[in-house]
Length: 248
Ligand code: SAH
Image (cartoon, rainbow, N blue to C red; front, top):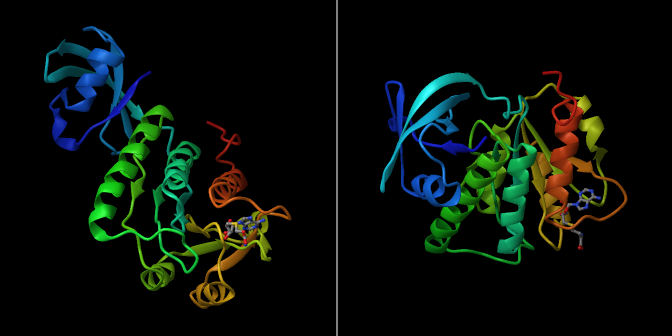
């Protein structure tokens, strides 16, 4: 069933008012009619099953007929932290990472990042990245839209690493097998760090290790910068029985 993410204030009692691009999607893309059903999420962990009451030019009014817990949110909260890579690759990581089950994205700059962006450009880019996450979350039946966080400098990112209970850094030159790293930890908040096209420098790996990050390997083949985070995320969720191993 089609799903839409809205803000809390769209809910008024047992009614929900959808505005903006959702109206366009309901009217012109899906061509829904009154009495058709949709799912609306306000990111509180619940899916609200709604019946459409009225479709107007600027607004769609619907009534909540049932609510149930969202099944699309993994219990293991994994943040993907990709080093800045070419824009279309980052978009791919955000879209696919959302489908697979990342809870947020933390881009950062590293020495060999091929692109660097200024503040003004970043705000525009981040709006676009957040929109990609929202669309992917709707499509893949997530209960929440993953947040795309502001791009950090390497120095800021090192400080961020210290806050997260478990940080895994994918390093093609060697590390603990990723399954082993997952099996050895009970942490539910995990950050997975991956490098740019040219990889990390040895000094960067050492700095990350000094902040508690654990280098992990994804095997003997070298994956591209946009493949590595998605493969790692899949392995990590699989290790926690959250990718095909669900019992519910
Ligand atoms: N050093 C490289 C490859 C970089 S691959 C080169 O010179 O081209 C881009 C990123 O993907 C790496 O920084 C690493 O984080 C991740 N990666 C790719 N293959 C990997 C593997 N087999 N194990 C662990 N990480 C890997």
